Length: 86
Image (cartoon, rainbow, N blue to C red; front, top):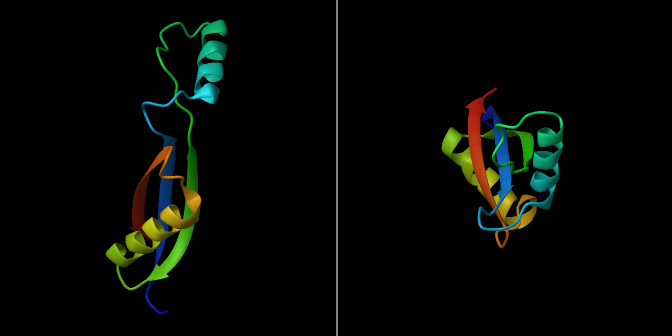
């Protein structure tokens, strides 16, 4: 495939209605450290991928396929994709 290079950023989070045990632990730790204004914490993951594609739209399409096949579990997670020229 020939084309331009794109940097893809993918943010993956648990669905908002699901309990986030890691977020709960981080929230409690922040409170214990004196950060009393913190009301809620959700923890996710961020993945950076470089792809070659003919357009930004094509790069996003490829990233969406990656997410649906491997990177995210659509039953319990949502994802957001950002693509920019490299």
